[in-house]
Amino acid sequence: MANVTVIGAQWGDEGKGKIVDWLASRADAVVRFQGGHNAGHTLVVGDQTYKLSLLPSGIVTGTLSIIGNGVVLDPWALKAEVEKLTGQGVVIHDENFAIADNCPLILPIHRELDGLREAAAGAGKIGTTGRGIGPAYEDKVGRRAIRVCDLAHLDALEPQLDRLCAHHDALRAGFGEPPVDRAALIAELKDIAPFVLQFAQPVWKRLKKVRKAGARILFEGAQGVLLDVDHGTYPFVTSSNTVSGTAASGSGLGPSATGFVLGIVKAYTTRVGSGPFPTELEDETGQKLGERGHEFGTVTGRKRRCGWFDAVLVRQSCAISGVTGIALTKLDVLDGFDVVKVCTGYRLRGKILDYFPSHAADQAEVEPIYEEMEGWRETTAGARSWADLPAQAIKYIQRVQELIETPVALVSTSPEREDTILVRDPFQD
Image (cartoon, rainbow, N blue to C red; front, top):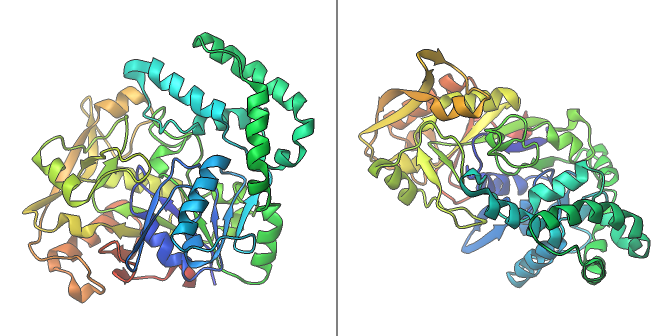
């Protein structure tokens, strides 16, 4: 049996929640390995809808769910999410949920700094969620983070606070803000510590035991490859590595543990926030895609920008992240279009490119080269086999996998878990 790593192969919002939920029902453990509560999954299970920002999707079905060390953890957001899910009947305890004790914390000062920077950026706004993700990762790399394990030693925190405040007080002064209120921060940490510590443990050790027992592990990525801090549309990216390789470093298991890499790919393209978007449609067609796809962010509620499928970007994402197969989602949103278009390359100042360039100015200037295909009038919604799909929809899927040079492993045709066409089972790799 293989482990499976799920990543978004576009700018996030590809419908990972439904796929992860479907896979989690067959996994023995589900691990979040990067990001924070800036990620969002909407799960539809029967007549219940669950909105998750931080907890791994397996928690809904009682599967062992783990927050790895690669995640930045807002303990107050965690408590609120646990309480909300508990109110929906989900049982969460230390047997089915664990947090890496070396996980860095998102503090109130990180949220404040995030907001101050965005407010001051003007036209240079990156479009963050304002939840302190970036500043928390900065403190981790700067070796001044307060981590989950520190919550058990708050009386000895002063030397770490000295390092932390030396950095943040200078930044806050630049924005005309007062220094960090250390006493208030310690008080808040003391208040939340018992809740977090009940779940804290060296999760690498627990995962090693799970893996040794032959259990199936599902690694759940957040955002998408095009938001990766190294490989995405920099600087309009998130502050973590979103590629599949991060599953190893962000969980404490080696690279051989990642198994089948499933890239989630929407049948068209969307992105939230600022940044380049070659196939964006700022017309009636783009509006139609957004309305039919209900394109609003799970976490922020922000309207997503919409455009035609960009095969260049997805091919690049699949190559960078070592994708074994893709899950194509939201095919039904394309139902009823007379013509559907796919971007197969770019023009940049007279040159033809078969990749997305790294420089921001080049990214903003590229013009998509489109291939047009005949659309289909019949519905694909709820299809569970190839026989249920219109011929033109099948041709579209086949053309997509040719262009991205990666096979389709499954096709999702609605938010319902059962409405899935399985081509290749990731857990049977």
